[in-house]
Length: 167
Image 1 (cartoon, rainbow, N blue to C red):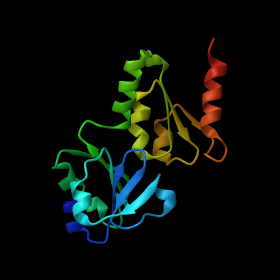
Image 2 (image 1 turned 45 degrees about the horizontal axis):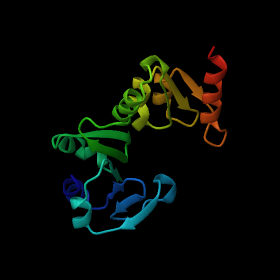
Image 3 (image 1 turned 120 degrees about the vertical axis):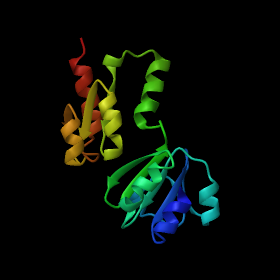
Image 4 (image 1 turned 135 degrees about the vertical axis):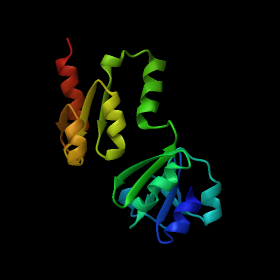
């Protein structure tokens, strides 16, 4: 997958998530675009690393979507310059469902909050979907509610409103 992307788009930034700590990257991403530390590694290290998430950022990334999907991975075009790639059948929604079932929470008692198009499946999964105010309009359109931005503590406001509504 990394080979395909870097061969087709030599200037693209690629990051392979190291769960819980950050990303192995071929070029540094602006710090506000990724969570955690970034470690620059060579192409071989990137292609050999197993991960639940790979990100591609750069002009032209949409041109490789079909070829990536042919490798049986899930590709989410977050923007026209950003792809989130996960193994087939793995998403925020599948992870939430696993946690929900493991905790014995009823499906009708689920809530998901999101701010990017990579959250769309999670919002569709939840009984109550909340989009952050800074989310793309397409995500707001599928949400049951729109809350404030991160700076406005939107998640806290949304959760508080749920507590107030409960009997």
